[in-house]
Image (cartoon, rainbow, N blue to C red):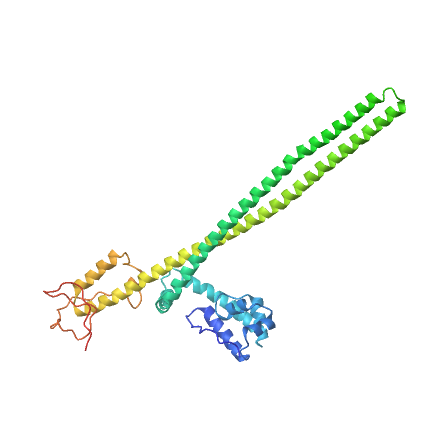
Length: 361
């Protein structure tokens, strides 16, 4: 038997009903696991999870392969997919943010109630996720800074080594020149000593001098070529390493900025949800106070909402918590001992401030 999925509530959206029908087809096929279904259809488990959890409208190839693996009629489901796309477009047009149709208003209220339930049921998890995202972003920023310092050190080392090789090249040229000068001096000395000797000795001395000169020049050229070759290879290797490091730094910086932006967005969303929940609770308190005839406390709570800058949120004008104007009426005959518990006692002649109701014995 496959692992039981999370409950998928029918919220009126066509895609949700489509996914519920797919779940029914999966149960009729013996409820295979996502791993087994992935082996049969050739698709990854995340894509199959999106298909069965109404994350997005599936591709036709994916739907046909999965339906075939579950023993269903692929042609019928392809036709249902085409109808689903048309229904989804109509649904999105009806549920636009500025839509005035009853369906759009009901959908917005359902989405708002779902967000409120998540916030009230698991506020600690949402806050922990935001804090973890912020810490992850900080770690990524620190890692990017460390990599940047490391790249700078590598670049500095490469420049120093290149400068050292560049400085050694003149030294090789000097050594070659010294060898040439030494050869020329030797030839001169031999020429001076053998001037009185036979021409053959002079020619031999000249040949030796030329050989020494050629060997010195060849050695100097080889040393210079080797030095230039090593310098080029080292420079190319160093530049490639630096470029790779800089690319990694850019990637980490982009990921860190994205993580920071997500954390900021989650924080703003949490603040808005908290304001909406606070205003809802205050509105409920106002309704109790209005029933008790404590209009001054109702006005005081309105001022309190204005002081905290949370008045006029979305729940102020719609939903089951919306305030409704209550016509003026005569005060209750015995308001000092109400029959129901109040959130705050109404003011009296000796009233000294807000107090909580006494617990019943």
